[in-house]
Image (cartoon, rainbow, N blue to C red):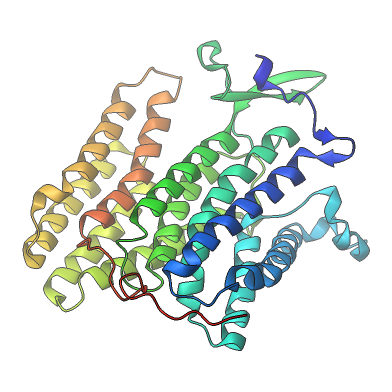
Length: 370
């Protein structure tokens, strides 16, 4: 009960926990990017120079994204757009703004943009995991009300002020923080085995997008555009693009395997729309199984590679069908595992190899001075 309500929104004096955690995440991302700088063969101090551009661009992008999606709050007082200390930023806007800043920097310095993004991607996901705890102290980014007393505990839920009292809500900020932290661990572990520039960034988009798509539909404070949750459907687009690019690279030179691999990936994503319809979900999964086995056969891969993804899928469907009635726990577990199986499936069709000269590890390049 004690952790279900933050003791204060401020850390020291007027310093907000939210601000402190965002800065901590940024510093962690810069430090990790510094470790990747030399491995990727980039010039010395690229990280510092890039941070001086990307961080301000990210903050501006995060604010403009939020303002664009909540225009009615600002249209009568345009100066209030500058009042960023009052809150109102969106991570996707920060990612877009930061990426644009990195692209401009890459053009000016004549550096490969995909490598710059690969350098930043793992740390960015860790920064997002840290920054989500700012939502805890601000008592925001929460999900539906939890009515079953058996599940009214932290960190499954948090207490939110309502009608003079407190009500238990799902701690969606915590779910996303854990997802991002695990995603960071996966990115950090695989980064040396992803050989092509831009590959780590694609995996970042796939991992983060998969989790965000699922978690976003639980939030009660999503940003909407035309009745659609903007971040959710942006996540869907990013998953489609990232999964398609990764599979396209993995199946390069093998057109017979590429088509079933891509259609199978589309079915994995289509299942998100069938989560509450078990028979349709199972039909999609069976079709995906057949296409996945076909893709493996065409690519000369063992179908056993697909066991992990389909085991997670079957476990989730079983949880949805046998979970406690009315509690929704089984369905939530099913939803989580459904999101997890997409990255696992894509990874299964990749031929992992230790990186070579593609990222400059075996032949250390000369590094230009600042």
